[in-house]
Structures are given as C-alpha cells and as structure tokens.
Amino acid sequence: MNTTLHRRRRKHIDATIFVDATLAPIATHNESEFAQSFLERSRIPTKGRARRKRKEEAAEESEEFQKAVEAENALQEELKQFTNENNFAFVVEKAYTYEHELEEEKRRVDEEIAAKKAAEKEARRKARHEKRRAEKKARKEPEYNRTEDWVAATTLVTTGQGTSFASSVPPTEKSNSSFASSILATEKSFTPLRDEDLERMPRVSVSRNAGSALNCFYLEDYVGSSDSLGELLHVCGQEAVLPFEDIDVKWEVRAKLGEGVYGEVYLARWDGKQDIAVKVIPFHGDDNSSSTVKFNGELLKSPRSMLPEIVMTRELSSLREGTTDRTDGFVELQNAFVVQGEYPQQLTKNWQQYAKQRGSENDPPSTYSAPQQLYLLLCLGVAGHDLENFPVKSDKEAASIFTQVAFSLMVAEHAMEFEHRDLHVGNVLVSRENVPDVISYSFEGCEYRFATHGVKATIIDFTNSRMRKEATVICVDLEMDPDLFDGAGDYQFDIYRMMREHNKGNWRTFEQRSNLMWMHYIATKVFDGGKNTKLKRQLKKFVKATANMLQYNAISEYIISDEFVPIFGLVDEN
Image 1 (cartoon, rainbow, N blue to C red):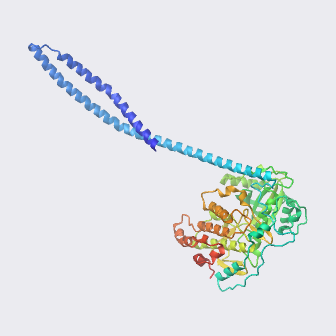
Image 2: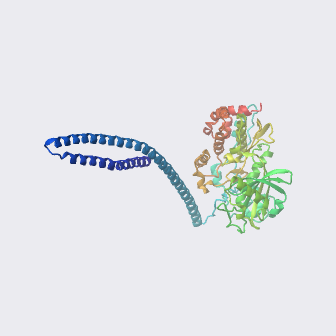
Image 3: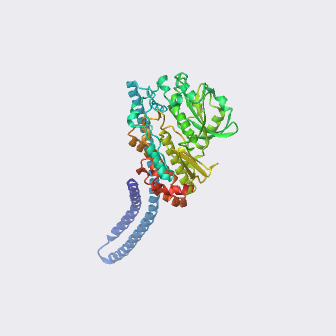
C-alpha cells in the first residue's frame, strides 16, 4: 500500500510541474515585452513640451502595462485552477490503475509462493520416503511403500502352543432396569489386551512362512501353498482367479459413485435383481508381473496387503448376525472376487463420464489395464450418500445419525476391540430409503432400540482401522504415512494428531478413546446446521451436549452421562 501511495504522490507532483512549466514561458514573454517598451519610451528629453508629452504617454503606457500584467496573472490563475482540477481526475484514474496492477502482481506472487511451498513439501515427502527405504535396506528389513498396509497389521498372534493372551472374564450379570446401569455393567466385564501382552505377540513380516499364516483365524482351514495370492483367494472363497469378463456379464454398471487412493467405486445392478456398490482395486501378483505398474503415483498393492481390508469388512459386516453384540451399522460385504483381465468397457465408460462431469484425481484405468492385470472386487451394500453431502433436515435426524454411529462403534469396540481411525464425513453414509421406524442394537447381551426418524447411518472404509479377533490383531502402522499428521484446515487433521499423541505412535494397541475423538468430530459436523438458521437454533442444545465429550475415556462413558440426555431424548423409542 505504501508503494501505491508513493507512486500516486509522485505522479501528481510530476503533472503539476508539467503544467507550471508550460505556463511559465507565456508569463515571462509578456512581462519582458512590456518592460522593454516601457524602458524605451521612458528615455525622453528633459526640456520642453515634448518632454511633458512623452511623460504623459509613458504614464498612460505604464497604466496599460499594469492592467495587462494583472489580466495575464488572472488568466494564469484560471488556467492553473482548470488544469489542476483535470489533473486530479487524471491522477486518481492512474492511481486506481496502478493499484489494480499491484493487486494482480501480489496475487501472482502469492500463487508462485504457494506452488513453491507445495513443491518443497512434496520434495520433503519424497526425501523422507527415500530415507526410510535406505534405512530399511541397510537394516535388511522388509520394505513397505504407501500401498502396503503394515502387515504386522495382519499379524498375528498365537504362540506355537496356541495360547491366547486375551483375558477371559465371564460377563457380569446385568440388570435391565436402566439404560445406564446396563452399559456400566458391560464396561466392567470387558478386559482388553494389555500392552505387555501385545509386546509378547510375534510379528508377522511380508515374508512370513506357512506355519505363521495358519495362526490367523481367517486361514485356519487353509491347506494351499503359502503364497499370498493363494491366501487372498481362500479368503474370497475361490480356488482360482476368475476372468474379469465372467463377472462383467453378471452386472449392469450404472454409474461411478466415487473414488479412493487405491481404486474406484461403481453402482451396478447384479443379476438384474439387486443394486450393489462395487469397489474395484487393482493389485499385483506374487510373481511381480505388474509390480512396477503405478496407480496414482504409487506401486500397486500386493495380495497380502489386500487381506486386512477384506477381512475387517467381512467381520464387521457379520456383526449384523450377532447375538451378544449386534449392529448393522457397518457396510455389508455381499461378495468378493479376485479377477484378471482388461478393464471392462462399461466400467471405463462410466469412469470417463464421471471424470467429465465431476473431475477425477485418479489415473484413468488405461494406465494399468492389461490382460494379466489382477483386481479385487468388493461387492457392498448400497448405503446412501456420504454425510458431507447429506442435507440434515431436522434436529431429530441429526440426533438419530449421531446415536447410530456411536452405538455401532461401541458394539464393535466390545466385540472385536475395533478402532476406525479415519471416520471423517466421507466415511459415514446416510440414506432415507427403506428405513425402518426403529433400529435395534445388542450390546453385551442387552438390547437397545431407538427411533430412526427416517434416516439410516452406515460406516464404511476400514483401510486405517484396527481390530482383534481371538488371537489375531489386524491394524495399519500409520507412522508409515507421516504426511497424514501434517494436514491443516479442518478438525479432521487434528484428530490424527490427537490419536498419535494418545497412543504414543503405537498403533497395535487398542485405545477406545480414538473412537470417542472421531465421534466428537462427527458431532461438530452433524450438529452444525449449515446455512439453515432455524436448524442451527434447534441444534444449539446438541452442540452444548457434546462440547465436553473429550473429557471422557470412551463412547460408553459419554453415553451414560447426563450430557447425552438431550440427544437420547429425541431418539428414545418410548
């Protein structure tokens, strides 16, 4: 701004000088002409009538001279005033032009600085990645990249004698007399694995042997070879890889629903009967035939790195059939296939249409499509729109969504020590179609029923999640992705750092508090009200009800507190 003022002032001064310099010769010329005439006519004889006559003429000419000078001065003042007025308008116009140019220049410089910072950040990320690779190579440890889930993640954890370290405590006999007492009794009966137990658990690396593979509950009846593709086929219930065209003829792909770092999601009609959401994830085989192929700048995932997501999705989906602990709040896994071949034409067509209408950050399928390319297809239930784009219409809908997500997490925590670890608004789907009036949950043998108010919430995407079943712990080491903790601009990124601070970077341990953190994040979104002023006023009581959530240690503690009462009052079936 100082520069602008300086330039404006300087232009005004220059213009003024220019005007004065133009008028000066006019004034000087007229004054010298009259003076010369006056002096010449003043040289008259000192005697006689001629002398007197000349004196009179000189006096008359002197008066004319004074009048001419005064007239000239008046004209000069008038010209100055006129010129200055017009010059001011000229200067103002020029100053506006210069200010606009300065703003454009500042914007251009800011964009250059932002681009430079982004490039530097990417360079630092690559440098850290290369440094980790070099360190692991020096230590001769297994090397992981961004697409490799931490397979201490699939690790697991029986000893050679088959001893489980999970404590076995009989359930406390609970009274159904009150909502809070039953929740509290459940908490007393729940004993998670201790840190010292986890330290005794053997790690399973990428190069694990067949014996250790058999320790995993999902491979108990596996009798094939120890290659990771064989294990993935077993989990999917297949004996061999299927041609992609065999599956392609069974569905009618209607649209692309969305995309992720590792794949695409499409809406399809299966066998002309049922709508499904199909997640298509390319990966490479054990023979590394496509291990150099990249998707979104990353190497394709390996068969073993696919296991955590499919196993976790299946186990969480199975909670809808549970008895002691039951919820249908997690996306339903209807089927899973391992296929091979070119990317089907109808998928490609829908991908291109999506990219044209909404844009895409993913590489097009043509970058990795090939006759030998492998894919994992996860066929999931259709569960609505993500919470980020779902218009909440009332305080009752908001209370119902919040309660459903909270109880689903609470049930999964107790059933399998589950932590989602990435429950942003894109991973909660909400639907208004075919929603029952009442929804029920079973938590440690007790049933809880709530009014839905016409909305159904479903939790998806377990890429970063953690769970335990029997002696098997499945998790992802988020320390392998340090950029995850550098994000800014939304409360979501603060949650990642809060989780890390709480667990001290040990992602194998079970920390109920992480789910509570994400519920507090969900509360800030679902109870916001957006631009709807009336809804904002209605939701104000819920903002107060969830403001102190983080003072508790678990969702179950918050649920039985007095602060949950305003929310519970709107969803209570009675």
